[in-house]
Image (cartoon, rainbow over all chains, first blue to last red; front, side):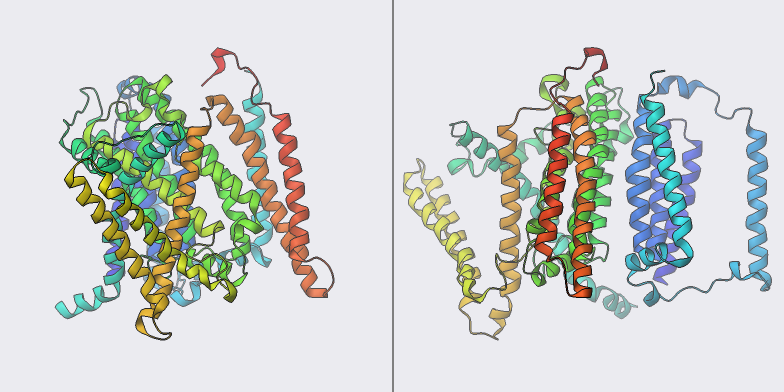
Length: 173
Length: 444
């Protein structure tokens, strides 16, 4: 009962603020609604007893990446941006992507309803006791057998892109 | 239905009560930290400080609050009204939210999350929105520059602060604030002695994160009027001020939990030093007696009465702190001792940390912005990463000694890695010369 109230609250908040984020003319308002959407997603993680994912979402996306977004937006001349046309020539591509995504969501929904879905779509919810202690379990999963190689590869990828960014910033253009 | 509601709220009564107490007390506390700041500043500059409102200016915070509440509330014509209204609220809310996981004693804690320290860091990183959005919404150059400086500063120093926190977490082996304090009780050692470099890094980074001098570039009076709050006045301005001081309390509490043993008495496990339990009571008695001694010297009758009242309050606190010590073991009163004395020691440590904040403010001149960035990126972050590595290597050497029975005691391993970290820090400090002149065009 309480769980579903929280779920629909956070889910509704995420959807509404995502729509508002796209439709606002003012870029800073859009950024605030994106922050709200990310926080609502974090709330869903919390409602699923995944505390670590919740706080990582808050620290990384809301506290880190979005601060840099806002930082950059504030330096842009917003008066010019407001007067520009909002939907540009790429809207056909956007529409196609949206259709593809919508079709995928519908497929998942249909498979689950029909009951003969592949196991990927039919995961049983983990009991809350199995998720404790959350942080330790995620740490052990990331640094033990099935995930350690992808995890380290992703780390190296991020490191490479970071070094690339530093090199590009250092070069005088 | 009603029974359901009662059952639902029953486990939440104490947390709700603590939350109410914190929301009520923190603004008052912030006001008195301002008074303390002015008094300490006056003392260091051989002045008296506020003396007019109440004896020794003791009622100054209340007068200030009334003045701020009654002031005209101005919203600039060209400001973004909605965000201008939202920004100070964001600042205060995030600062207050962080209080939820701070253990003011073994019993005085709203929620013991198993991600406690991460929660504090995460909520702290949300606080920057209040500053950035407030500065942007004011639609003024000074405000915008202040907001930009502030966000750049926060993002830069958060990394160093996070790494410093990690060095303490590695000894504690947990993220919950309560578990961290208990780990320090079990290891018979505050983590400041195990990770001194980490504590120093956290001290510097926390001052920078709260925008305090010598890192108060976002509100540098000589350059930016008042930085991001230039256009704010009255109650909204008071909210920003409240948020700043609440944030100071929060970072001091984090440092206390991580490095200074939280609510633990000094030497909590040493029987021979049990006489330290008398310290809280004696301190309160001393303050009370001094207030009584000063009372006849006040010029006005009301102020004399007020000083006697202050003395009475101190005596009351002394009795409250003394009762559990003298009560027979096993009685209800004696069982209250960890809670009451825990709160005393916790607040005493927080107050000491805050005093260091004030002390540094009146001692050091303000940094230039490029020096601030250089200090953060070229010195603090490399040293904090080296510190985490050093602590990790020390723990590894210690652990492997456990397995084979031969090898490194923890102290030796820590001394070695700390020495290497300090050498690196010295080399970095020499290499990145902060006094280097920067051409005027390239300054931020």
